[in-house]
Length: 427
Ligand code: NAD
Image (cartoon, rainbow, N blue to C red; front, side, top):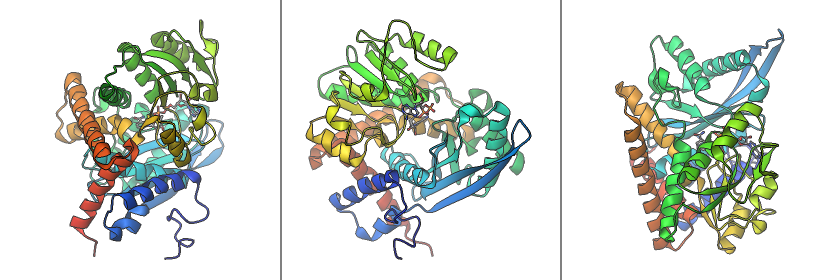
């Protein structure tokens, strides 16, 4: 089919940079890894993208219509799985790119899932709780035909949380007529969620950083860290690293940030951010912009906000020796090449932030079994999965003499290609 007429194809003219970036990483590795070329076009496009229109009644009586998406990339290894994002920047290309990354991530940590992603174009901070609930329930009913415990299992992502997952669970369960715990993960523990899920992405980031530092005969204690994004992933990463003796020199969120060479008191900053909705004027620290954070003097830089924040303009000014991609797609391919030339190690998103989906997998298993684990079991099992994935990527990087991203993609894409090959094509 002509690329321009296939709207799901990455080279169709109107596609955004992020989808092109996700595809560029895939393309390069598919060639380098010498994989069977016959499966390449199949893996290059999502299996399905559903766009829905969600009209809801606002608190002032108006009817407002929001656009939502669910992109399902590939399910050769199991049901689709991936987060739901509420943000004004959500669009079709973004969810397509994130769904593709999710396929590779799930395969890299060897979970029996394919990759998906969804979102609604909205500013969750400007919606009341009632509006958010009506929007979530309407969106769930609109994507109902393609989700389910054995079909596609959503989870939280930027702008969404356990409360939103509880509304998805309830809406879906009301419509099927029974409590379907396995339809969504990242639920509150009181409605069948898993202990340890909320902090899981941050804990996984910590596990991966610790493993990498060990290869350099270094440790977390005393390492100077800067973290962009102070939401779920950024704040838990900061708390866990600080708890192991890291010096968190800088943190930012969308519109404010702070720097303290001697180390920010993360507990106090978290309390301050919760109470004030901003980090501005946090006592004892200097104000810092997002750009200043990315280029500040530190050992480890952790982007934990949104995609494309490290681009070719900022990359040459980064002073960190290691970049840990806690966010999805924070580094553009151009910036990635610059960091490589500068000798800066990048621990890629599909490895570094896989802790969230791993505990989501544990939650799904617990929900299907109706048998719940304790926190220690969740944390121990998570550590095992993350360390095994790191060891595999590290060994592949040595064997193929390549960077960690290429190694991680090689492992992940090979596994998905193998599954496609063995199953064959329907009909
Ligand atoms: P969140 O909504 O809880 O927090 C996002 C944070 O980023 C907020 O502090 C926000 O102020 C900040 N931010 C937003 N736009 C920004 C910008 N342009 N510049 C600087 N800061 C900005 O979201 P989250 O769940 O912590 O997700 C963050 C990233 O991690 C996303 O890329 C997401 O896809 C990825 N991720 C999340 C999970 C998870 O379990 N939540 C798992 C894997 C990956």
